[in-house]
Image 1 (tube, each protein chain N blue to C red):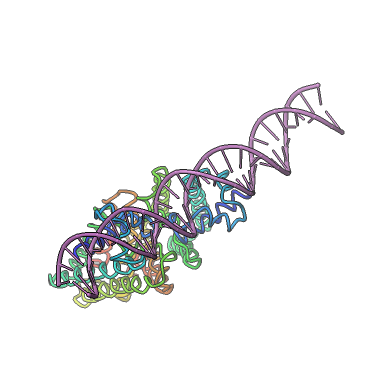
Image 2 (spheres, rainbow over the protein chains, first blue to last red):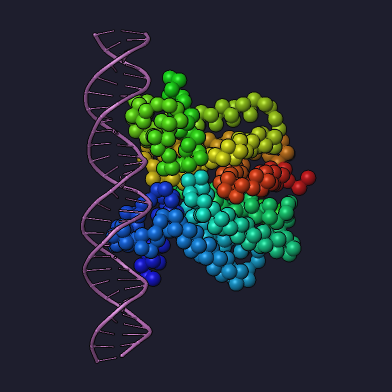
Length: 188
Length: 188
DNA sequence: TATTGCCTACCTAATGGTAGGATGTCAAGC
DNA sequence: GCTTGACATCCTACCATTAGGTAGGCAATA
């Protein structure tokens, strides 16, 4: 069980940094110190590995969202905590695993797609809840439906991460994130 | 010269759909009806092809932006015209070439990176100009610097394209784009 | 005659994946 | 307590395919 986790950890980093088509079993093998063929014992095919990665990553997201909920913060602070998840990715030169797989979607085995869609749905739903909460507390001034604001927020963070990782402009990422939240706070 | 253009056209579509690591010279060869080895006559290495693709794509962007400028539209309509560029990509199941390469940046030859950064800089600059123009005409109510709004706009569109392409939810893309513009228009 | 554009034929390295064997662990049966 | 069998984990060795790329030739064209 421990080796399986190490494989998943290594593979997750590789996917987030290089993409699903940008790494091989040989890369994982050399990282975890096991022979390439032995990896197939744990994950018979690369697609199996991909499906497992999506599961793990969705689980990580869920626990992060639950942790943030547990902090009992005002909505804007919850969003800031959500932004922090992307900041950590950026610092590790990692894309969001969902965003990375999304760009490669047309090359992936179809069995990976439902998990991928669910990942984005989960993000959107949580953000919509937080934004709706901020709206009903008169903390946010919403110009549209919470779901629409949620989609803008999610899209912008994915895009900002994508761009900042290649430009190396972390300050731009921070500014983008800040403006996203202050614009929700409205014209106070 | 004509074959070179056909190769570039084919390669561009392949990159935008499958990523730079998601296609091979064999794919292009079968599309343009030429032998794989002959491609190396036009583009000795895949990196050469990548650099050329970035040049072509940046040129396409430039002419589109100039065309939009020439329409002499109000700023919000210019942004809508800019959004249309992404809509066309989405309809063709294509990512933005810049966005696609950005995710794969860590696997690309370094000579491709400057062109990639310039691409994003060009987008941001143009958007900032349009948004500043809308601000100075009291069409937009800006809560931050035009460059910051530009980055939010660009990031959100890149992310929305990324997500919509995998969820298949074109309506969500449209709603996101609309909200981005209406939020700039302010609280009229 | 030199160059362009394409060809066939080939190369090396890497890809995801398989077959079958060695070692270890662990519980059931006597 | 000891054996036995089942299963898990890892190994070496191998496979077919594909990757990007090279060498050298042939025909057209300028």
